[in-house]
Image 1 (cartoon, rainbow, N blue to C red):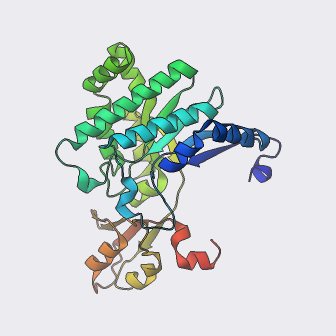
Image 2: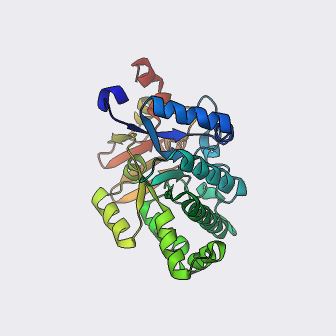
Image 3: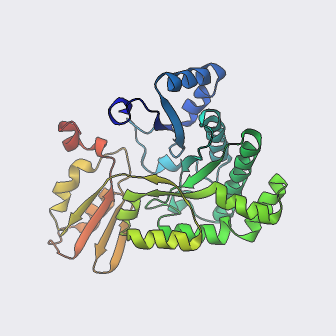
Length: 306
């Protein structure tokens, strides 16, 4: 790809390392091999995907893709380790980014979950402050809203950042962890904690792009990572939707579906849930489905070599 689109130039790539892969890649010999490989091939790493912690292909993932989530210290440890790894290979002068899970799966939000997640996000921000002090390199966490999760929409993300991550209490906690003043800590939170805007997820939620950008600007919430990804859209949904979409209903990934009928939105955690709710309903022109779909998992697309 580099040879085709950037001949004679350095080409930026992103890495996705699971928990086990990250541990192995962080060993001194493996790190040296990675640096040599990047230099020899005119590549540089500017971003990492630290969202899926475990296997992401060839086995059932579904809602387990969010585990360990931000209620768990292992998620914090893993994300800190990802930041340490990126700091080792991030070119001077670039701001690095690490995308991560949207807190946790929505059904796991109970009790002290929000406070637990807020504390770990702030602790990670403190780790990023320490990296910047030690290396001079700036890295920002990019929290990725996704259907069926604690942070599902841009509106929910804006509210969480405003009421929790950018709140005076969070700045005070970061000041305690880093020795920064409260004012400096407030700026550091906005510098090191931002949003991963996944265009598929936003489209599945029927978000208007201009309104999304406007709300983020108004909230002072930075888009620290942008993901251009694909989903599925089916208009005029009726009973035939089951046959049309059955090839996408695998046992590996969640395929969250959002239905719009008139001005009302109905959310389903997976295609199978949407099929069950559909029944034998006749096609309706005002009924539209949008859903998340890793295209490589669809047998119909695989048959076409896509």
